[in-house]
Amino acid sequence: MKRYAALTVFLGIALFASIAFARNVYLNGVNIDGVVGQEFKNCTVKLDADGNIWITGKDYLVKPSDGKEAVKQPPAGGTPPGPSTGVITKKYWLVTELSGGRAGYDIDVYVNNAWVKKVQNSDEQIVMDITKHLTAGRNVFKFAAIKTKGAAADPASKGFTNIIIGEGSSGGNNVVIDKPVLEYKRLASEGTPFVNEYTVNAR
Image (cartoon, rainbow, N blue to C red; front, side, top):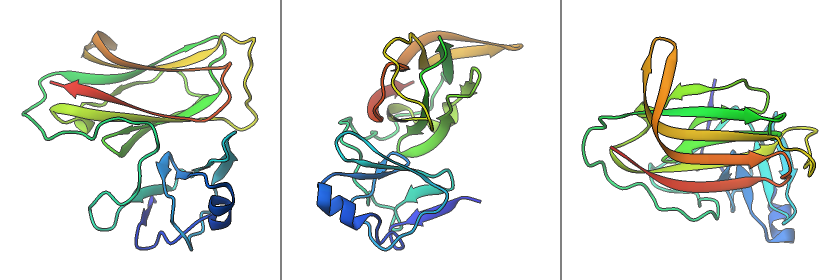
């Protein structure tokens, strides 16, 4: 069962670390700076080279208690989604491309601040219809990538994990991407966590 970590109970984590390093704290890719008095169990905690704290826990979803934007987004830029401009007439798919032993990253995919899919390093190719997660007009995709346990940067490796978002159609057991609208690639030669945002216009 999902545990919704609402802001009313989000009264803190790693306060000392936040003050000491003046860095950021993220839960499943979402910035939770200022939160105190909260314990997270069965989670993975990593510190990146800048002292940022990255907490990953599959049982937790950050959700404001008042329906408003209550947590700061990671410092990746991007534009909030705009209002719907009509009905989506295209089908949109998430497809992964793997090569050379993969990148060694687990990547959480969010659409308009809602978690959609964890692309794990151990997964085979993923083909997923994500149309229902989009609104007509502007949509914001966020990717939070963290190296898997025991994985490290390998400068000699050519491995990568590529996530392709595109307009397409399905027939039988096949999906054809007619128009790629976004590609997100992580390399085995990389070692730090990443949080990136991109805007996609759905039609």
